[in-house]
View 1: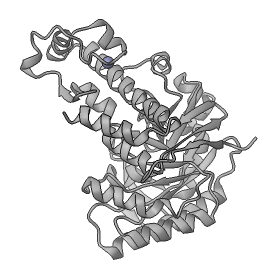
View 2: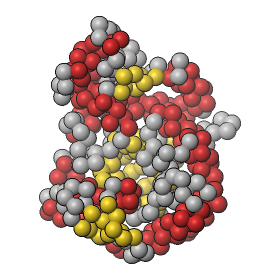
View 3: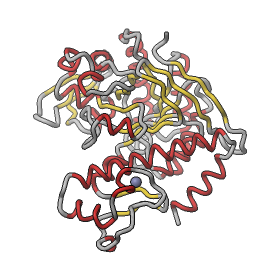
View 4: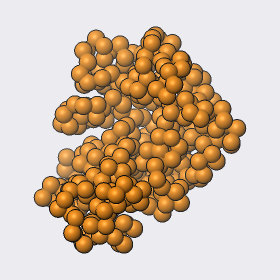
Length: 372
Ligand SMILES: [Zn+2]
């Protein structure tokens, strides 16, 4: 069997919509798309047992190669039998390449065509990651899907800077493919090109020629207006092969997921639902609420009447608020459970709508309620 197998089950026949649903088969189970992948930066979804994550309906997580490389080290994880064993998660895992984190978190000492020398944000120690190192790390982790090492340009960047980063990303993508030799792991290419439509298209075409089993769009949702991100997806998507999975990296606001699916995206990840959950910023069918707000002090109704999650079924807004105000760890745990349940239900509802050729109506109704 190949590392992954992607099958499109249905494309919506509606006007102005490229929405589709499918299944992605991996060595660690089948994933229905569209899918939202929660982010377990340090090989854990903060506050949740792997069992709880499964019960919430998730069949794939994202873990950060960069963080796990710095601590506890990919060699230890390999010794432990790989990341699945190490973290007690037997479903699928996608690892990012470390590219984004090296450029955004590390104190960079030097960037060359060979890779990046940077200092650890933990203890200041000096490290080097290039395409080969990124592949070594991700193969040691043994994730189901690995990502090529890329250079993401910040927003805004000049055309010249963006072009340089995209060219480097292409060179690295080729090298990653050369070094990558783990049959049970799929390696995805990452389209860069910043906010220049022609550079994005060129990047998508270049990577398509390299025949990756899946394609990601990187360098989006980095501070640009939402519409600009949507435009870039529109410009790029037609240059990617239809039959391969498409992954929009680092994007996970409910509205962005709906807009991404409408444009033909299959996979999403974002720290937003879990981070917001820990901070008491909770998604509901009628929009986001900040549960620590004084108005919820005496509110004995559930957080969201339409939600079937453990938090909404068992507790009131007043109790949830109390937990956050008293700095009790159960608050962030319940907030995370609720937000992840919300995200999973959102993509499941989207899937049902696509199956029924009902996506545009779903979208309209969701917005009417969410922005009410
Ligand atoms: Zn809930």
